[in-house]
Length: 95
Image (cartoon, rainbow, N blue to C red):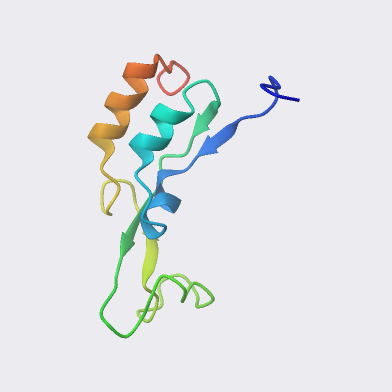
């Protein structure tokens, strides 16, 4: 099963933010396994009373430690991500 051609990822950088994972490192680690990328954003809203584990609350609830927001309005750093996609030769993002 190693390197099965059907195994791949739908990269969603917005999920990496509240997991404290650098999406550029992920892109560079799995360049041939990224089949799609969601252009979504999220923002950390940690205030000392909430955490990333408060996701059982509805989106938009001020008690959440993170929330999804429109692309470009959150904590996803898009420039390094696009540069990483260019380095690995990813073409499906910009057909």
